[in-house]
Image (cartoon, rainbow, N blue to C red; front, side, top):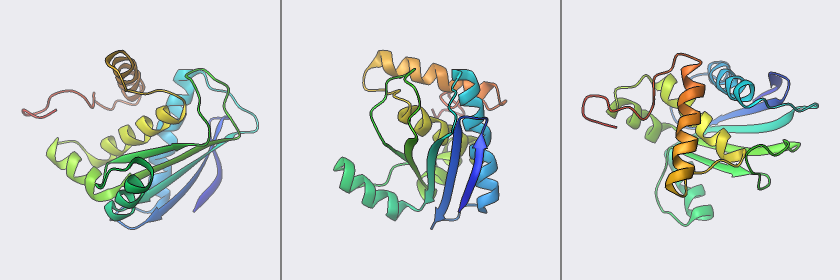
Length: 171
C-alpha cells in the first residue's frame, strides 16, 4: 500500500494491488499520481488537508463481484467508482473522495484491442473514475460530451492521445 503522498496539495492517494498482472505499486502510484495531479490542476481543485482517494488495482474476478453486488451486472468492467458522497462538479472536496477499482484483464484486453499503450489506457481509466467521484457522469449525451471533452483536455496536457479517437478501425 502506498500512503501519505499527495497529488498537488489536494488529493492523497492510497493504493493497493489485488490480483491481475499489474506492475509494482510504485509504478502504479506514479502513473495515478500524474493523472490525478493533472486533473486537479485543470479543475482548480484545492483542499487542505488533502482529500483521500483509494485506488485498487484488481483482477476481473474481483471487479465482476463488485459489479454484481453494487450494480447488478454480472460481468467484469474496466473501472468502477464508488464515491464516498454524491458530489456535483465544482463542489468542495470531502475528506474522503471514494474508491476507484480497475480490472487488469479487461483493461489489458481493451488496450491491446485499441492499439494503445497500457499506461495510457490505465491513465484514462483512473481519470474517468476520478471524474465520476467528482460528480461528472455520462448518463445522457450532453453529460457524456462534457466528460469526454474534459478527459481529452486533461490527457492532452500529459501528451496522452485522445482515448476516443478511432484507431485502425476501432474506437
